[in-house]
Length: 211
Image (tube, rainbow, N blue to C red; front, side, top):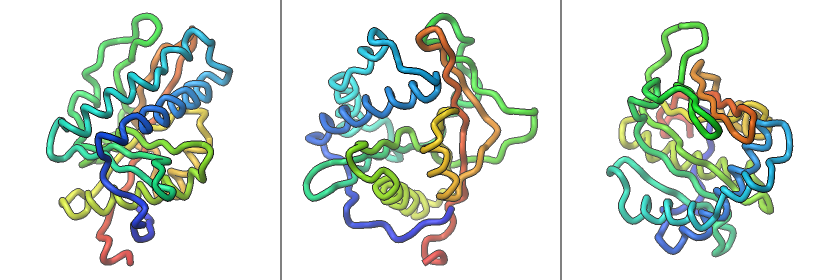
């Protein structure tokens, strides 16, 4: 993965950041679902992306992380939180233990494309979002750099994330950051349509060598 030094404008998330993280995450998820469907998300479905509920989940993740390997980082513009990234170890069941799709919102099992062996991955970016009022590429890169530094120091050699098919902004950012499509996908039924996500992965490398 190609990266620049981590900026000082990224820090570990604090419980007080949860409300802002929830706002950013809800807006980002709504945008991604719209991109995946190729149309405006219906109001009744859009209402499900509730910022307060997202905030509650992130507050718990910050205060009581599932493991020592789970982290949440925030990007700042001055004192304002303008983006966040959550990461942790890859869950084994994410590679195929999910139930088949059943009705709106159901998830199809993740599967490989073409049956080829997939490379081993050490960590997963669970969420990466930036307030659209701020430069997404700049803050996303800072968050990704900081995440990669932490993972490299822990001995991780690779990481993955998921991107919605149709989200050209996210796909371009991942490509420019050194990620490639992994060959793993998952699909969700949403608002009478299907949203497909592809897994992307990158080798982390030694930050000391890259700098």
